[in-house]
Image 1: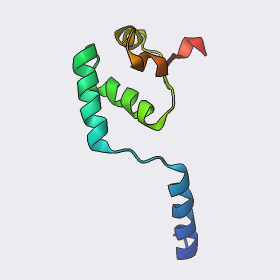
Image 2 (image 1 turned 60 degrees about the vertical axis):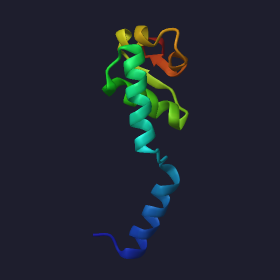
Image 3 (image 1 turned 120 degrees about the horizontal axis):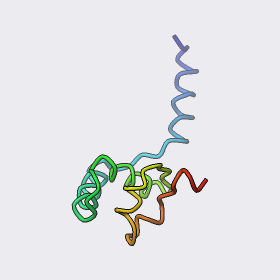
Length: 83
């Protein structure tokens, strides 16, 4: 068990590096993207989360990349084989 001062300091450091996202917005955007693209909600949750935190999403799912082709979300998808 961590001593309380160390636990408090560790939590403060963790809060500095974590990015919190609004779950309601994430789910709503994901369902909308899923319906528009034909991709699964499971996949679009990851796409929307990446978009919300401003980072690329790396995937080996070429079918997902094809479904996102021509959409703004395609810009954040990176295929693993391209790295």
